[in-house]
Length: 95
Image (cartoon, rainbow, N blue to C red):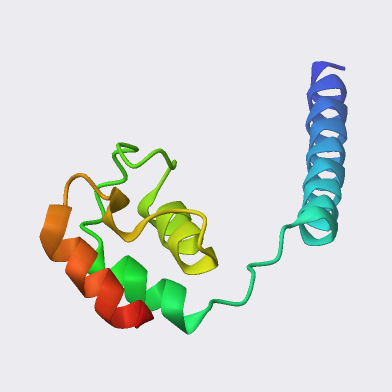
């Protein structure tokens, strides 16, 4: 009798686990955030930045700062880690 209880318990947990994994897979495909198309200028500006994601510029990451600079929402000299060297390179990229 104990073997039947163990068998049915394992079977039930297997079915529940499989169902949960299918549900999570479906939700991940339906609810995922698509990666936005990368702007070449943003990529070039991001390459120039030090990549430490310190937040000293007022943005959460170097990528966020690069996007803001390209959109004109931040100044080129906002990176405190890179200082004047990075500012000059960003100005050259943006023209």
